[in-house]
Length: 273
Length: 252
Image (cartoon, rainbow over all chains, first blue to last red; front, side, top):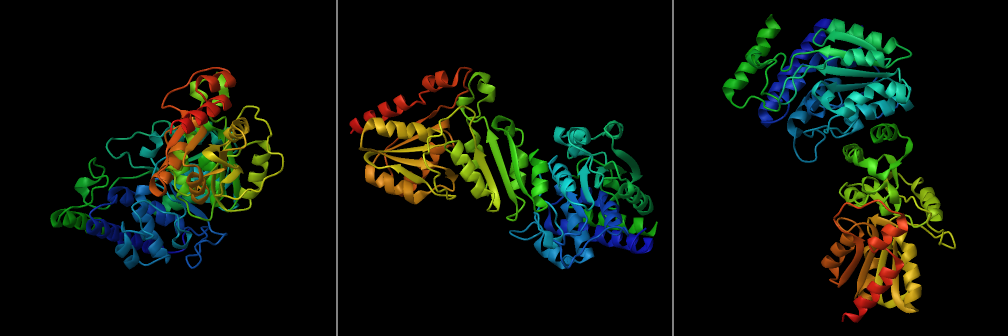
């Protein structure tokens, strides 16, 4: 199922969470809790056996695409890409949210660094990804947020199968962490609606590598319909357990030594459990 | 639609996306996000039904702010063709050169007034009539009115500059003409805010302060009416331009 063992994936997830906490504690800004909710989703995807990429030649035509539509989650994108060899972790630490680096506060498209799309404003990247899926013969994955689905342009994508045509190589990954910036989010019957519009809808625990791996295989094996993966996740997963699934931490990383320690302690405790 | 078009362009395809201009308001975030994807894209947005010339559909359909909006989006070149033949020539050129383009099209029957296929260079303005008393700078189909006015004003009166590229603006041609005549009138089917008038005014203010007049729409919502009726109501006619030129020249 994966190019590496489950144990190695767990180790990578730990390392990336640690880097994310350090990165955003150091920078004093950035969206830590959203990033933490996507670690397994992203790692399971790029380490799936079918997934094609070439970190030495980021613009390689034969690559599978990963669009990030909820652009504030870019720190996890940078750290996964560093793990894959597009850049080094040190590069990300040195350049994060600094002028004219590849590691902006929201992604700036740069294929060399594995950054598929410039993002930021919500409800847009998922359409760009769909456009791309219509004209290339590789898989196009797109990660979107549940809060992002409050944007009408996100919801209207579901009807693209009828209004335009189904792109079976399109896999929309919905990060259902139940929290937007300042409110709780309930995606409601999005799965049912997508099903009515002819999508393959798959529900999966977004922190379970094995389940994610199976879901991705099911998605890429579908030859007629686009797929919607609704990933049940926890915002802030694997950091300070007090802050997991809590409002008030969107774009607010630990601000002092005590808060930072609580994140690291939570991470270490989760690892030992 | 612009999101889809952007994604296709990001896959290395040459894309032309067309819509009625006023509906592109909805797509502004998508357009801005498109322009942030890098310099390897080839994306043309063609907006039809611009200006009051749309007529009876009324204010909701009159897009008189599109140039202003697009000037705020870096990387887009803004093209304002003058007639149908011009559109054909321009499209040939911009399909050969990568980049982001916004092409402002019209709806009404505008005469094909360009006798010969003109040369078209992106970023170049064209001096279409030579005169000493006043400079008329027009964009889009208003170039037709500008040439009509120049003819009525008589030989040697109006220097006519046709703008086919609003961004980037051809500073040299405009400054040279302003230096010759000392008076500049702009003429556009667009709100004066952020369109041709303010582009030219900004250029002149910085490099060659020159008395100016404008024929453009005020900061208003318009109304239903036949295109000719509306042009008269808002002063966007050849007659108004001729009158303006005389008044302007006599003002000194």
